[in-house]
Every structure is written in C-alpha cells, then in structure tokens.
Image 1: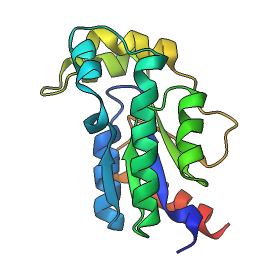
Image 2: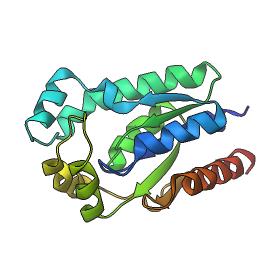
Image 3: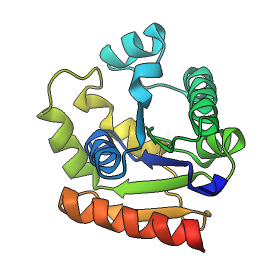
Image 4: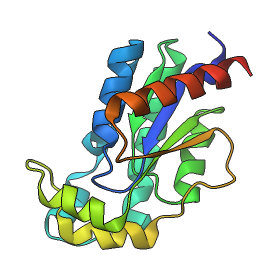
Amino acid sequence: MPDHTRAIVVMGVSGCGKTSVATALCERLGWRLIEGDAFHSGHNVRKMEAGVPLDDEDRKDWLDRLGAELAHAASSRRPVVLTCSALKRRYRDTLRRAVPHLGFVFLELSREAAAERVAHRSGHFMPASLVDSQFRDLEPPVDEARVLTVDALDPLAANVERIVAWWSAEATG
C-alpha cells in the first residue's frame, strides 16, 4: 500500500460524530482506530469538565502526542484513522508534519446541531457549554490538500461510503 494511504483524521467540533464515523470507517476497512480524546492530559480533561475551553498551549502537547501515535501507527503498515477536533490549520499542520500525505475528513455541523448533540450525550467530559468555544476556534479546512468535507447530519453509512470512495481516489490519484 502506498504511503499516502496510511492515515486519515476525522475532524470537527465536539458533537459532529467523529467517533461514530471513525469507528464505522475502521470496521468497514479493517483499519486501526486512535481515539484522540484518550490522549488528553488529566489537566486538559479537568479543565474541560470544569467548562473551561482549552487554549493553544493546552493543545500543543496533546497534538504532539497524537502526531507521535499516528506516525508510529502509520509506520506499522496498518492504516489508521484518528479522531481529533483539529480545529485550527496549525493543529492540522502539526499532524501533517508527523505523517506526510495525511488525509482529513471534516464533519461539518452547525453550532445549533452541535449544541443539541453534546447536550444529549452522556459519559463524555466535554460539556455543551464549550461548543461555542469550539466554533470560535474553528478554521474550516478550505483550500487544504487531501480534505473531504461531509455533512455530519447525513446518514452514517452514506458518509462512510463517501469517505471510502474519496480515499480510494486519493490513493490511486
């Protein structure tokens, strides 16, 4: 398999469905899943649980850990899907430095839909009160290489099919 087919990041604001899409994608393709939230420091988790948004400094070590994990996984020759908000271009560029030819799937979702989804999920440290801060930080990945934007409200199976078709075209193109 060519190097550029080794890794995809499923990105977007909290509540867009990163974990659901990435899990379904990994099940479909037999790829490895890396859940980005599992790499947050205890400090970051406590901060979010308290309703305090993360800043660039909070995210720096987290992104470095994710980049290292992604690079390690990609070097194992088993393709990988990472869930990561990757809200800013510089965050995505940090991950791109770790794994060249990295692909991104941006799950686009309105602020209202994100707030609704986050308010109704359980067992996650990210409270609905932080959705607005995610949208303040969001720099949509327009005009960036190897990015597919999909509507997060479309059916999961349809989005997985779009992603598979797009990434297959990327791998051959």
